[in-house]
Length: 202
Image (cartoon, rainbow, N blue to C red; front, side, top):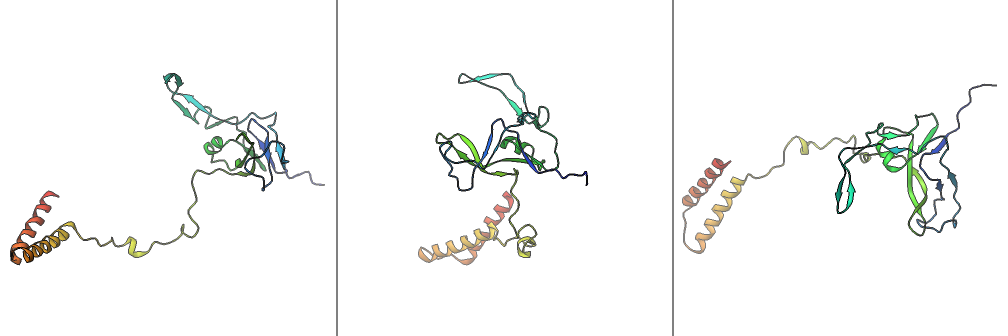
């Protein structure tokens, strides 16, 4: 008989409260005790709750009579304090702020799809989640090659000077046709003068 025993996968609750896992069809709000939990994970006595490290940076100040301090989170004793070392086959349930501060760990889980009591307090969840900071790229777009026309050549946009000259000539011709005749050469000279002024102002 082999002495090598495979460790049974387990989930350790590192939050300060017992964790109730409810069935998938459980409503978002229920009366306490009205729905039986599938599993209850109590906080283990041998582990302290994992908390986000912090360090006070400035002296205490009062805003509207309330003390306010400048605090750097995730720096004291590392990003997270009281977090056990990774163990094969073991996942740890932590609070969301702790999970986001230690996304480099792939053995941390957080509550997902909360279940609350009738007063709005969280009493459990329907699922657990592995926290991530960023969304993955949509499927099919990660390796997609951009179209050549969108990267190799810029969009054709008429320069401001060409558009100004075109509108100037058009407006002058329109004005001449309604009020008095303006020769084409005069409107063209005025358009060229506008173009020269624009180039000097660049």
